[in-house]
Length: 92
Image 1 (cartoon, helix red, strand yellow):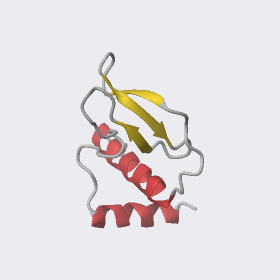
Image 2 (cartoon, rainbow, N blue to C red; image 1 turned 180 degrees about the horizontal axis):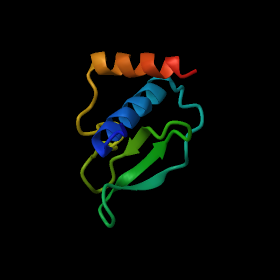
Image 3 (cartoon, rainbow, N blue to C red; image 1 turned 30 degrees about the vertical axis):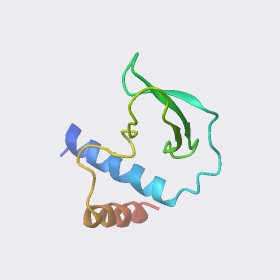
Image 4 (cartoon, rainbow, N blue to C red; image 1 turned 90 degrees about the vertical axis):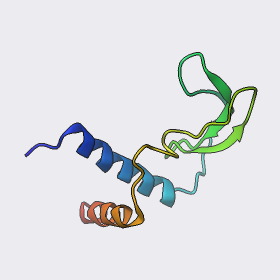
């Protein structure tokens, strides 16, 4: 049976969390504008080039917002994260 969009999102969010937890953030972008939606400037950020995590943030004139990757809706519990990590290790 093919997975639906919610199952796919949950799987990929788990994979991203595993990637970000294990990343040393060695290569970071220059300061770039951060918009939570087109035209809604929220300052400048530096982003890890490997995992996409916002590692530094200049608050700027707008509200301080988290990256959707840092705080996704339906964030996985520790138990779910361990299950995803174990499943991903089995793919190697």
